[in-house]
Length: 240
Image (cartoon, rainbow, N blue to C red; front, side):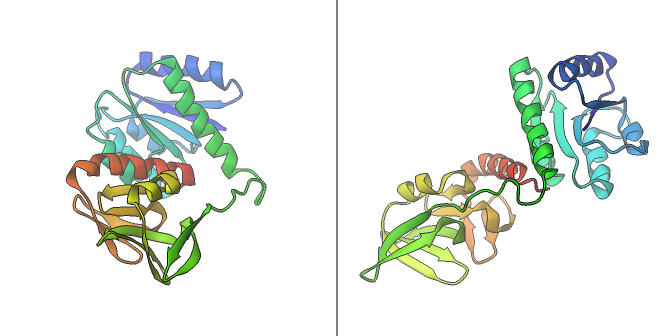
């Protein structure tokens, strides 16, 4: 496992080296003092701790170029500002650490990155997750089981909850809050009337989420948290 640190300040690189050697002494360490040096290296990192504010090519620009040749690198941005969190999503960042952070937080984030790396390298089928639970609803006088993973999005209309799957629209009397709690972190409440399944999102902006089937409203006050949660979802799934 290769863990790289790219930061223009030597004391920061040295600090990370000490922390990483303590937590993962068997890891191969790669150190770079600029985005240009990182991109010229013939060694591809498995996990990359990347500063954003650097002279020359900044960390975000370096990440964009790195992604063209290394789609699997687990990128952890390290910065004193949170202004770039939305751009971090665009390059499939695993995490966004804002300075200052304590040893516990760093160890937690690095360990999750290591676990993702190890998970990717397990033999196929060695660690399959079970399907999401199903939801039992009453519609048209019948009891129907709906797999949560099949729900593209849900909406509230005229005191009913409508579950939109790729094949059907299922209406039942219920509360969106209860569905939200049942669905868990695979879904997000973008608006008081809409709950979306992260897996079916194709694109979004500050007002609308466009899904494989249909679209959902986005409340402006929910947008920033939505982006953070969607980033975390893609981290868990190992997606960029």
